[in-house]
Amino acid sequence: MATDEFETYMNGSAANPNPVSEAGIRALFDRQHGYLDHFFKGLDFRALEQFCQVCMECTGTIIFTGVGKSGFVAQKISQTLVSTGTRSLFLSPTDALHGDIGCVARGDVLVAFSKSGGSEELIKLLPFAKAKGAAAVAVTSAPGCRLESICDLAVVLPLERELCPFDLAPVTSAALQMLFGDTIAIALMQAKQLTREQYAENHP
Image (cartoon, rainbow, N blue to C red; front, side):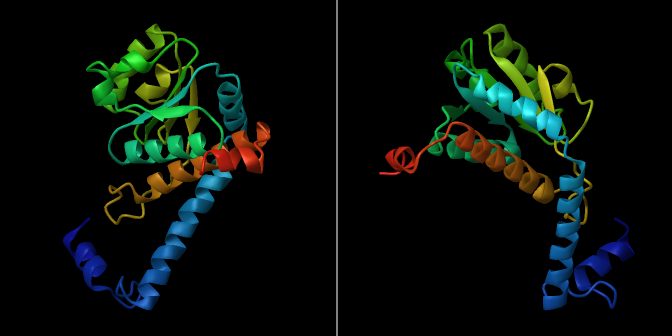
């Protein structure tokens, strides 16, 4: 961002009001709304169906992994799955490469979240997980990325850009990951016909 653009961003203008004013906040939410529309319009529902089938046919554990903000989102989605009747856990890619990959077994599905699809920790982890018999799924916003090339299935989350003025802070991409994961969790919950009583057993 050029200096004058940055000053406009920081101080606001007639066209771009102070970002912490009512008008400025509304403008940011409107912009984020547009980015979400781009996501919904570009989703490949065939890939989502394939992902759901992989999860439904999983005879082991659905293991989520990711680095940084993607890792936090992956952990939250794993917890949503557990609470709604699907066996799941979160695996730190760093810890996995130092022994924790021992929890991965044949019949598991490893779901790797990465906006760029180029996280070195995940690139290193995936071949070892697949060697242990786990299926690998990439969830990314970068079609044709390295992570996609070494996975059995890829789900692309369409991302126009981040709301961050520098297009760097993963505020929009993280929201898309959360939307994807939690919606899939409910799809699996309904497919398994989880009852209210079974749900209550997980929430004593």
